[in-house]
Image 1 (spheres, one colour):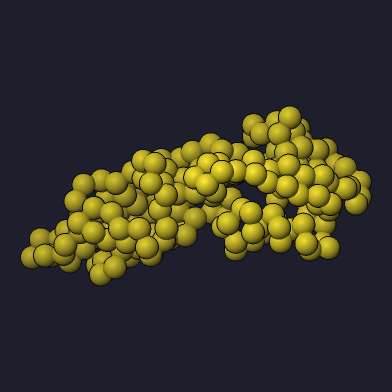
Image 2 (cartoon, rainbow, N blue to C red; image 1 turned 90 degrees about the vertical axis):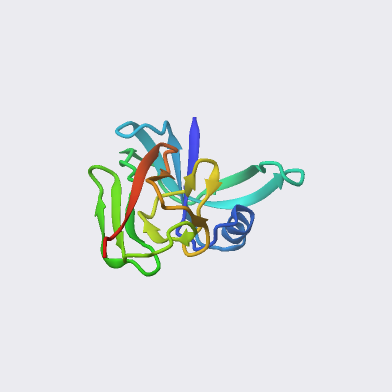
Amino acid sequence: FNALIARSSATVNYSAMLADIKNNDDPLTVIVGPRPEGSDIQQGEALITQLRFRAAVGERAGYSGVLEGTGPIATETMPAYVADFLTFTLPGQSGSSTINDTTKTVAIDMPNGSDVTALAATFTTTPNVLDVRIGTKVQESEVTENDFTGPVVYTLKAGDLATEDWTVTVTVLDP
């Protein structure tokens, strides 16, 4: 089975986030069950009573912990995960971005003469997006620069680990 701990947090460092959850007296939601959308899951409130992690420098961390239930367990249907951009802009763009969540595309116009070879996009995503990448490179809003001379494919990974590819196309306007 798979377990997913759901908690709203601005922390992106998993070690810090899990330590914060363990040190906080508030229960968190624990979901146990298969991940596919539409499947039955069990959900309840629990406290983390023990938390351990280990990893050598540069390796993926492995976490283990002990949870203590604090209430009833309910059986529910797994909700759908959505991996969409909510906003997407480039510095100096002309007008608004056109975001199409059906075709998974973003279209942006830039003024004539714009250099689009090293721009850092500012974006927000639906809350359940775990990460945003171009190829294997993690993208950070307002930080990671990319070359937009051709279409750029962003991959958004949702909470169920499914991915959605989004294509961003930038057009430099004629004079």
